[in-house]
Structure formats: C-alpha cells, structure tokens
Length: 340
Image (cartoon, rainbow, N blue to C red):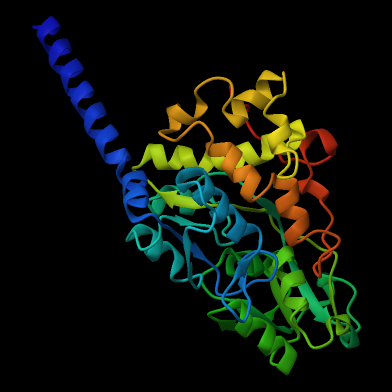
C-alpha cells in the first residue's frame, strides 16, 4: 500500500507540475500574442515614470518596463503604459489589466504575502524623508511637532509617518490625497507645512515647483523603501523573466557592457559576458525567450547604471548621487545573482 501511495503521490505531483507549467506560460503567451507589453506606472513622477506633453514616458520605472518589452518582444517600443494611483495599482495587477507593475512600489512583508503579488527585485533603494519650505526655518524632522503634513493615500508613507511621530512623542495633522501631483500642489499652495514621501519622490516633486530652491529635503531618512517591479503570483515563468531582465542590466554594468559597446562585447572571451549576450549557453531558452533577450534589453535601454544616470543621476534635474544604489563593488548595495 505504501508503494502504491507513493506512486499516486508522484503522479499527482507530476500532474500538478505539468498543470503549473501550462498555467505559467499564460502571461508570456498573452504578451507575445498581443505584441504589446502592458505596464502599470505612476500618474507622473519625474525620474521614475513621467509623461511629457506628447505622452512620451521617461524614468527608471518606465525604462524597466521597456527593458522587459525589448527582452520579450525584441522592441522596447512595443509597450502600453497605464498610469495608476497608489490605490489602483494592486487591483490593476491582480485583474491582469497590466502584465507588470513598475511604479515606485515598496517591497514589504504584508504586500508580498497577502496581495497575491511577487516583487521581482529592486531597481531603486530608497527611504522616506521630509520636504519643507526653507522659509519655515526647520533643519530637522524632530522640529516638526504639530505640523500639517501632505502625503499620498494607499502608501507605506502613511504607516511610517505615524510610527515616526509616535516614537518621537510628536503630533501632526495629515492632509491625505490620491496622487503625488496633488501632494506637491498642496505643498505649494500652503495647505501643509511639510510633504513626506520617499526621498527620491521628494526630489522629483521638488523639481515641479516654479522655484525648486524655495524647498529643501531634511536629512532624516525614517524608513527602508526597496522599490521595484511587481508581477502577479502563480506564473513562475513570467516572474523569472521580469526578475532576470533587471538582473541582466545590473550584471551588464558590473561587466562593463553598455548600450554603446554591446555589439563589440559580443566577441568578448569572457564567458560571463557571453552568457548575458546569448553567445554562450542557453539562458534565454531557460526563460522561454530567444538567445538575444538580454542583448536587446541592454542595446535598446542600457545597463542599470545608464538607466540610473539618464533618469535621476547627478546630471539630471533630480541630481541624485548613486549612493547605496551603486554596485556592490563600488560602495553600494546594488547586486544581482550571476547568469550562469
């Protein structure tokens, strides 16, 4: 009986495995059939996902979507951006309105375990901070007792803010709105004394002010905010694809592969370079993609460093230094498993 039970169990596991594999191909099959990647982004955040007056999107998060489109469809332009508020984003992903979410979203335990979603990596390490008008004369967040605070609903910002003020014996009055654009307009109009969000978002919102120099970001960082792309649970193949496209961009920077030299690097004798660019091994086939999946992402969008500097780096209006987002061997914590 035991042998029979084991045999039945083995058949059951095998059947479940085949069933899972069939289900796991769904997102990739849908994207290939559609010929377009549907990607959820913010309603407008400079440096991360922000449209111009012709609805051309720019930013790290937008480029993360483009890299996946390039890897899967061979063309970074085959993409539809869907702007979503913080409240809308999870429902849009869960209902398959979008294939992936790349919307300055923080990876947390609750989100990872209760929303039916999977974070695929971190494309920006951040932390929550505070922005004030210089005329207020405040130099530290510990001077904010009794302040009126503008913040966005449906974010980790709300909980972090409550924790910080409670721990430091301070009180505040929240002004809660639905979009980041509404927070900066409220701040500009004087509806609140301070604006709180991830520091990267504060620099982006500050750039929207008529005169950005009237405001400053305080030095305190009150939380850990690992931001990155997200997919629905239950599709391991798609989870792996989105995850490894980002990892390929990070590994490419580490190996010196850029959008400008990627064609020359195809002849490199370094097997690590060959595995990324598809001239060595079968990394693409293991994902269900063509051999040039990572080559296309790097050629059309760039490595991680290029993506960072182009959108939020020191030569952009945001003027953000690499800091902890530098590679692990350059003083930061940005790190990707090897492709091998």
